[in-house]
Length: 96
Length: 130
Length: 123
Image (cartoon, rainbow over all chains, first blue to last red):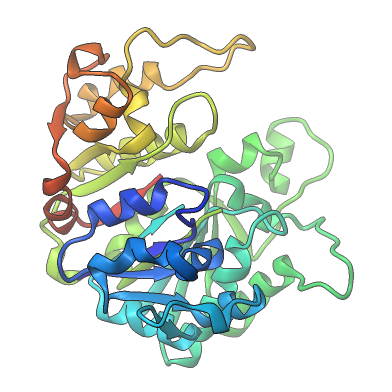
């Protein structure tokens, strides 16, 4: 299982689409930095197909004033949870 | 586990270096080791000894240095990416006939081969890019 | 990463030439990996497929570009060049438009490709 770390959102970039194309059926996706903009509102629908395997970094949503607007299908993780996700994955791939 | 980080974002320009530092501290708190931070692309600017941020902002260069002092983390800077961008240690400055230098210990100029070696000597490599 | 030590290394190139140094610095990682004896495969993904377009030139200020580096890959035994088929099509390109022979990869094969490589460097 790979952990894909994404810091771009689908509102301004095609990178999230490439990330999704590269993900296998049990890979996980973590949204960080500007990637968390994609965790909000109808934009987040792009992740419907991988529901249950999408995470967003809590502190990056909070600093952007968007913590309460996160799509409920996307799980919140703190920095400790970020580290835990990297432990569980065999390796990580960063998309930017 | 023994972790390595690859940092490719310049300090203060993008969030990458800040995220990498947050992650570095979190992995240590969870009981892991941070063996190496490798700086590549614009990440090499994190090694500038001349960085002088305002006092009410996080001092990234100082924070990297502190990681080395507290946890023995190697701070490796890709020499090819660094020299192009004016990040240069005393020895290289002499070799290129330049006055002054911008990189000093505990940061080390090193070849890209060290980034390849990181894969065999560490359990995890996590990349932070702009 | 001990369970994947026999896998080849993958360098994913996602940026086009000239506009930034990502492509050059990614290729440098591939060359160094190969020089250290790793089996290195390249995947040109998204805008990265433009790296392979034939007829590229040096920049007007003497910037070297990355096309000369592509010609060195064979010398380093980097002979698996995989190219994102969908990205080529989106840009009106086919493998006949490329500087080097590359194998088109369909989107459906990408996840398996990532799963079979270690380490993966993405530029």
